[in-house]
Image (cartoon, rainbow, N blue to C red; front, side, top):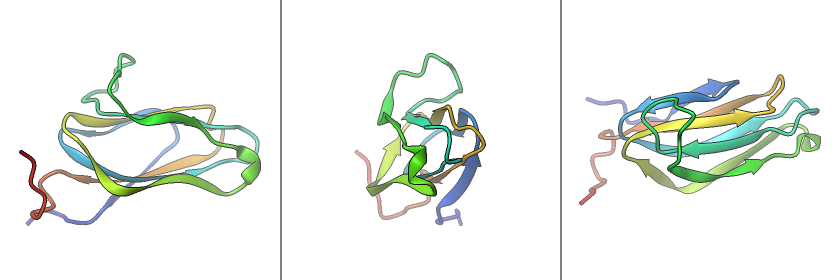
Length: 111
């Protein structure tokens, strides 16, 4: 049986989270209080700099807010190709991306 739980992935730089179909559930940004990080998510199968299928608009988060900033989706965002998260100016902060592999939700149907 597939794992049906959200897989949290901690990152500190741009990286490929999944190669292949997946669901993006949420993103939480922990800033370092100094740098204003910018984050964008792409439906992309590799960590290429040519990522163009943006699924979450690029957003800059205010480090002065100190603590957690983030995006909590009201739905699971399906990515058919992969999930690449682009990060800049994170400093010593970190990002937690909550996602789940496709095929783990038996009650979803895509036609």
